Image (cartoon, rainbow, N blue to C red; front, top):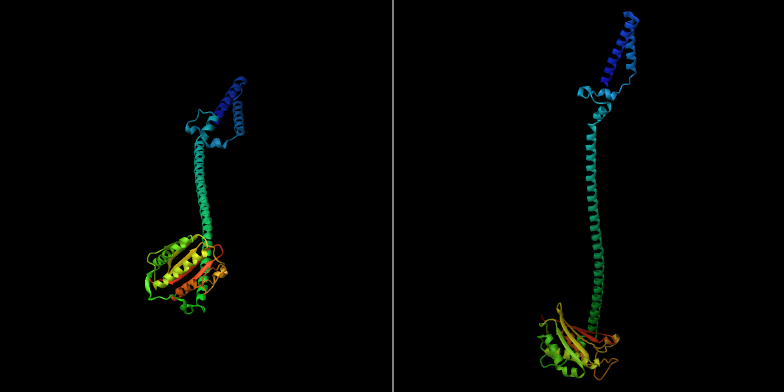
Length: 331
């Protein structure tokens, strides 16, 4: 801009001087006239300069100082802005890169959150399954506790019944006579098998199979061998008489803590529950009575109680008869 103004000033001065000399030559004017012409030209020049607009942005940037004298105005303006554009472009690219990184971080965080949610869902499912299993276990436990309580009540009732007026002393008179009833330690499993073998012919004739099972080969009881033999034979003989059809008598012997537990269960016709309560009473005849004096089971009870044990029965019509015996273990 400074270059243009200097050019205009020089051009205007040259024109004024030329006009002044021209007027002086043509009109033979005096030097005073020439001076007036020059002053008029300077005034005209000042008027033109004062009327020119001033551009602050162009005034601040001196093209002459940096050697841009030959550049056009538009070229100079573009040169003045060229330094800012690369910097802006770099800044924008940097922002784009930062946004891309933030987006990747956000996607990674979302993926991690999704994985955590899936893991929580799996854990919740496992917890729900465990709750169901726990409920089932608790129900099974409750069922078993009820069964145990019922069995304990049955045992208590049997003990109370055995402790009644028809207890040990009341049955001593029907105990079998033995030349030598001194108690000795005997194998209860072998004693049961011997009694079953002795009655095998009668059982086969009635179509009944006798099976003996012992959970331990060394289950011992201290008692008279004769009395234990009578105990088993009386119960086996009673089963053969009252089953009234082909079937099986299962004798199972096991140990429960300090006691021997003997189960003699047949699959015959059975007996009503209210009658079963009385089968160990002397001379009892049930609704299914046949020939006999009713001594066999009463004598079996007397033998069990004589050795400090307990005997009871469970039956229903059509479900067979089960006789259960507890005897003190000798080992």
